[in-house]
Image 1 (tube, one colour):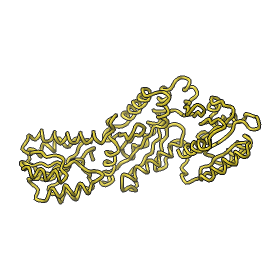
Image 2: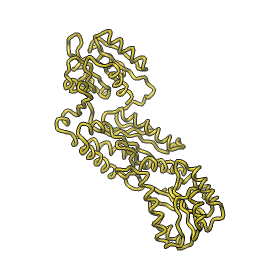
Image 3: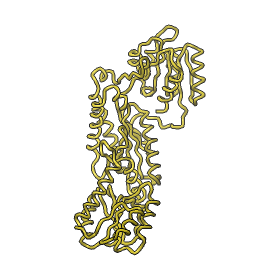
Image 4: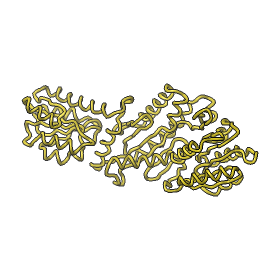
Length: 436
């Protein structure tokens, strides 16, 4: 099934029909489907979800205005362009067609080539209206129609949902022009792996879509991850390349360690016939992308749970926080509040106890003061965590009176939060790290 579908209803003259068949059947771009009567068209309309419908009213006996109204009511989410075509229609007839929902009127007495070009102009305008305004890539409305059409017709398909992680932070630190270069690089990579009839689209500045086939989706995602991670360090300054991250200043006191820009991808397909609507498809792809996002660096996750990288697939598990704090009152306050928010919480008094707890249980976030009883052994703990394969993706928040943000981030902390701090600010960051 092509990118756009035109439904021709009625029996136009052979010269016109021949030209339309020739011009409207472009491989992987446009496909013309013919129906001689409104009844025949009504049977196939909900399945093919045409982008454009042409009524040759001179050859139709049924009530065309009523059918136009029915289309408007029936296909509210995927409404096609409606064109009335006849050799001659008086003013009152044309007005009735327009009031019933028609978008244009064309005379069949014009040259067939011009008639066909006018239809192609409607299709072009339709793509422009439903595409990203900056990149001109097809947007969510077009992709929704394409996926729903493939579901309806039981055609093979796979959707790859791609998100640029840490892109906004990169833009804040480096500016708009370098950010645009990253987008252009990603666009070039996508073009290198996307060949017709595969289609690439974009929903916003950080999210892209690829519609392909099940047998190609995972190889495509794997290639994109590898290629993107190889090239993206080139967009960072030498000092950031050496340490492998950038420092984002949340405010004058709070600093955040932000990894390089990377890709997270969720892949779903129609192989198991589990999806009935495009909404279910996008929701499932979003779930898969969220799982992939938990990994460090570019990664993809398929609904078949064939994973690249070490990614947890336990969405129902209660997230666990480990607190290392020698201030008993503060530790109790943090533990009580976080437990009320639905997290599992364990507290330790020393960094040695924390290391033992991390080796024993799965922890999602380490909330620690690097100085315990006057000893700054927290830096060693943080560095040790980053060296462990099963812990290197765990978030670390450093709460410190030392006010040495550079040392905290260099040791592996994701966020430096100087004491004293506002508790609501801390809990906001905890939620952000644990619900990413």
